[in-house]
Length: 275
Image (cartoon, rainbow, N blue to C red):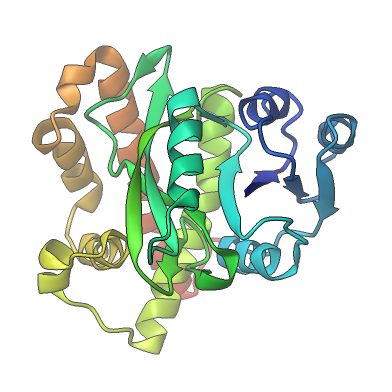
């Protein structure tokens, strides 16, 4: 009753465990960005349906997948290769889709792990829309896309476990270096388009993803925001309770935020230093 969508790029180490966690589904789609390792081979050997498309940006890539992949079932669960569905979450989503309810999308709670520990407090956000009817879902933003459902959104119990450091800290930094470039470009594009922003919506908007958009826009306007982000994660969200892993993660996130600041300035000024 539920199709699975897995996005991949060079995920030969992570993909087997991900597929195993969703093996209860008879319709698994691996949506690959032309991996150069054994990702495609592993996908086909597992019986998953493989589709390859050159990656352009996150929203465009995900929207194309929802509109063009031949899903067997009316409901789709989206998962990344470095994520795992827990048995409790599997049971919960199967029950949810059998209900005659008006929801077109469901949020699930994700647990991020670092150095073997669940970062219980330091996560910036923990609920994501991952179970949905594909015709009722779309994505916006070049990176860290916002999920926008055309209808009511519910919540299911259980955890989606995320292991973002399976390829090491070096890979995490390289990936977020690329993400920061897209984030900076998104900021510049938003300013050029004069997209609306509301401080009130950043705190009071009921829809999580809409509230997240305005919170991001608020963060973009803060002075010394890399320091502010550290204080929010480490003090306000009590990241210090996650021990040394929480401290390290806060520092990495602050560094990522500072890269966005620097790259935004560079794009807006149009100046790059040439020796």
